[in-house]
Image (tube, rainbow, N blue to C red; front, side, top):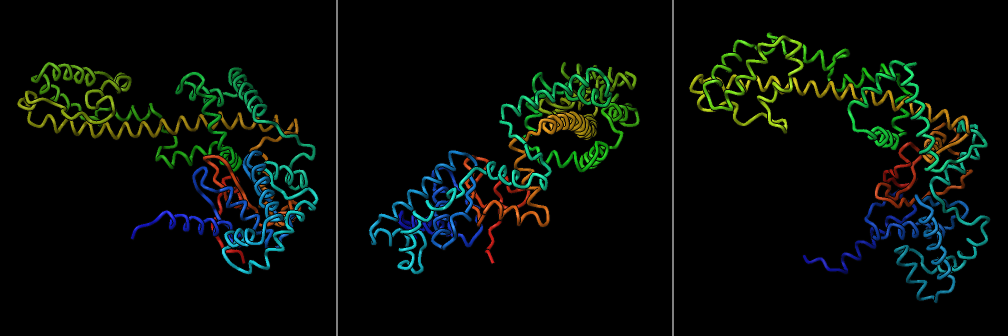
Length: 435
C-alpha cells in the first residue's frame, strides 16, 4: 500500500494532538524544527480551554529564548482567536482538540486572551532554573540553603572551581596531605599537561552522581567497590602482577628456551627474536619485570593483537611444536596484560576520584561561605526539596503549578513533562494516564 504525503501529515497531526493532550504525561522527542514547541503550546491552549486558571499553569523551558518564544506563540494564538471569524475559529479548535463540543468551546476561546491579560503576573512561562530559584526562595530553610543566597553565573563558577583546584594543588605540594599528594602524582603521571582541568570539568558536568557517590561512602569503601567490580585484589598493584607473571613457575623457561633454539634456526627476524627471548629468560625477576613490554613485543603487534605468525617454516622444521609453544605463551601474556589494564584502571580511577572529591569539597565550602549557589545547585536542591515527604505538595502549590509543560532546547535535553525526582533535570517522564 502506497503511503501518500497526506497520510504522513495526518499521522503526524494525530501524534501531535496526542502529545498536546493535557490528560497525558508525555515525553515528546523529535528533531529540530519538527514542531515540539507547537505541541507544548497546544498543550497550554488545551489546558486553558479546559477552564484551568492561567495562574495555575507553569511552563518550563531550558533557555530564556525558548521561554520568550513559548510566551509569544501562546499570546499570538489567543489574540487571533479573539478576532477570528466563526468558521476560522471553528476549524482551528477542531484541529487542536480533534473533537468534542467545538461550538461550546468557541466563546471560551474568544475570552481567553483577556483572561490571561487579567491574570496577575501573567502565565508562568520561565526557565527551569528560574522556577527552581523561586521555590528555593520560598522554602530556604526546608531546602537547607541560606535565605539570602545569590546565584553565580557559569563564568564565576568556573573561576571559583579554579580557585578550589589551585588550593588543592598547593595543599598537595606542601605535603600536608600525603594521600592527596600520592593521588595527584598518580593522576598527573597518566595524562598530558592541561588534561587535568578538562577531565575534572567533564566529571563535574555529572556532579549530581559524583556528589551522591562521595556523600554515601568514604574513599576506602569506594576503592573496595571499584576493585570488586574490576575483579582486582584489594592490594593488587602493577608491580605485584608483574612480579607474579615473570617467575619461572609462571612462564616455564625450559620450554621457551627450546623455542628460542628453534627460532635461531629460522630467518634473520626469527634469530633476532630468539636473542631477545634468551636475553629475557636469562635475566633475574626484577629485570624481567622491567623489560616486560619488550618481551610482549615478541608475541603481539603494535595494535595489541597476537602476531599472525609467531615462527617461520625454518623454525618449525627445527621443532614442530615451536608455534604451539609460543601461542600458549602469548595466550598467557594476554591474560596478564588484561589484568594489568584492570589494575591500571582501578589505580587511576581511585586517584582521580580522590583528587576530584577534594576539589569539589573545597568548591562547595567556598560557595557556602559566600552563600552562593550555581545553576547545578538550583536543580539538585530543588529535587531534594520536592522529594521530602510533606514538602512537595506545598512547594508545588507555592509554585502555582498545574500539569507542567517543559521545553528543553538542546541536543541533550529533549522536551517532556517534569517529574519530581532526580531525573527531572534530564527531562525524563514515563507516559501515564492521570487519574
